Image 1 (tube, rainbow, N blue to C red):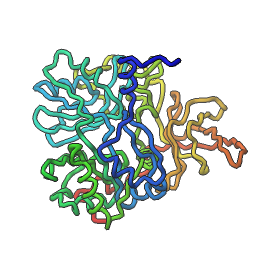
Image 2 (image 1 turned 120 degrees about the horizontal axis):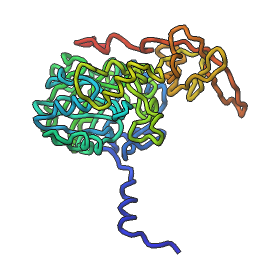
Image 3 (image 1 turned 90 degrees about the horizontal axis):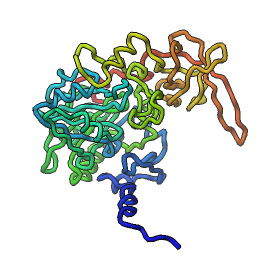
Image 4 (image 1 turned 90 degrees about the vertical axis):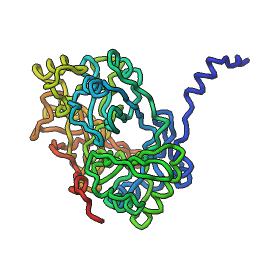
Length: 403
């Protein structure tokens, strides 16, 4: 006999529901594959049609990705800047109203909790966007500051509009002056009796924008965007195509390149900003921030790991492969990998034990692949690459050219 569900059991079951985003009706109508996944308690499309079509929409036209599940926190109050400066490893004083800044934040061990973008909306009002949810940590860190922190994740719908024709698409929506928006700037536009916030930001390493609006206006925004973008090749893209683009750009992802420090079972498995290639975000010329002492010690003693980009021989992606040195010793592993159609390279992001990962090091990826029930193993030579695999000049051009 099954016991009846008590009220606490019902509440716990309800907490695990996966919710539709405000764009769900439009997305589901275009999703031919019925391929979905969950992100922060929302259901999102992994693949609408074919991976090739969606990837090349990002690189050759305009692609729209549903950003709504991203965690979004409103930070308000006269101590907001001081609070953010303590929270983040990066100096936040240069973040003026109308600007966006990429930043990371750590625990006391100097291990990264997450990375994300901070929007300075107006005086004494900021928005922090991140992949993971961090409300408890943000509230605990705010002790002693005159700030208010509000989780507005469900109150803001978002679309990433990326690709070389993205600016032309937004101009066709009558967003006057959108072509003058510089990278990491934001601006408000009137739309459907409300305000549309547009930031020149994205996760593809290409020309692109992110659109933020109240959920009640989400479907009208989607419709207006796709009508305006139809002459410019607009398509929706799912998470698979986005993942290819962000690997090409060399962007890290929480839960893939690192385990957020708050989720660690073994504390020594965390990664510092230096160990994720984010040392440029650590500013020791400010007196106090979370993890400063541990990061100073790491700078003096050296890091345990090095984050690298790899060009791998052949065309077999090295997902989760071990990396060996010339002496056949395991020195690290691949965190993300894909074939890059734009760079025409077999590329990967990897975490290697120090001192490995220097340009010129002899490295091999142990790759397994299955062909018709036959497993094959190969040791593919790897070359360390310093720069992003794909970084077109158009991502920074202002105004962008009309492609």
